[in-house]
Length: 490
Image (cartoon, rainbow, N blue to C red):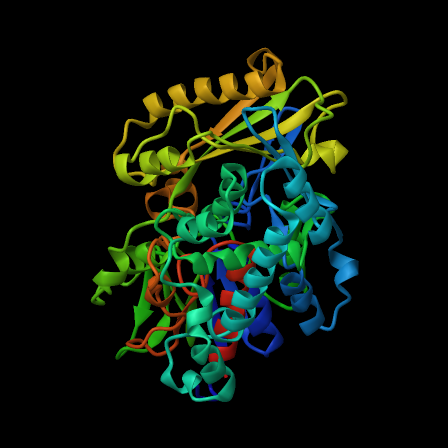
């Protein structure tokens, strides 16, 4: 980059957009963020319903070092802005036959728990986690920490070393094939297959390389931020402001301006805001379709299979449940059938796996005394024109029936308040095309290499951050996309 680039406009105040703005402000750039919504966060937002507060989007916090790093770069003490605690129990798993399994953060204790609850041995779990760590060690320096789209990045020993170990990342089997070969109990296989949903993929199609994901939880840990997940957004927004970043909320960018294939700024209504660089934190599909009107779009990328979406019921529940924790999973008995409904039939199984997050277990103010705030989610297909009103009604009934059966309580009679988020709303509220949570899916072994780069090869000064581009979706990867953009701008 040339030395005269001074002003940067970031489109979108999602987590990656905020993180990018912090990094570039620290470098000395004048940074402004334009956000359509009235508040920052994108999909990582919050909802209030009467006396209940809900984290509306991502609810699992791992690899907090990527948040802390932003404060450290700014010369701040992270603890002055943001606090969190490590979870002893990452998740509680519930099965129809009455089996209950605690995923402890201590891996030996977790392995023993699996051995006690299933027909698989603790040793098999430890070996699995060792392999998960190995995949991470190979892929992290090449894939997670840098752009895959610049040839010069490959000409160093670190990259060559990782490429020589490519066969060890298990890219040519599906996650389910790998896990079925390693474990014999359906419960254990389902438990580890579930990690494919962390980036909106199908374990019966996605490569076993995604078995890297458990390492994020078991090695680096899972955490709960003081004040809930939305405190991540609030603390980073405050840091950005302290670094000199200017935010414009309720501001829709209509077009990215160009001059001879160089960034000239953005257009908001009839007003042009000049800039030397633009970073789009908007879904890559909408970036090209809505903002780059005279540029030929990369159709092969934009037409890739979208990731799955979510159907979430935010329920204020008039009871507390001692057997539940912060994170809870209620498994279906036929996991493959559930994913067939999502990916082939494009609808919802009548027995979906349910994720239940209850932040009031850690943050008492999120619910009134004697009550809990239930973030009740199932994985669903992205929106391709389904009758969502009909699907939601049936799913709601099936979810309530399943939870009531396993918890031996009539859940419907306890619901004091309800709000619903479906793929249509996810699309309209956060500009995530078709409501897909992670951009494109990772349902083939080359998916990691097919995501859009973090920079434009055709437009000087244009960059991309967020879950729809490299390295992918979820809080850690979104923050790493900002780090990659930072590294590209020199």
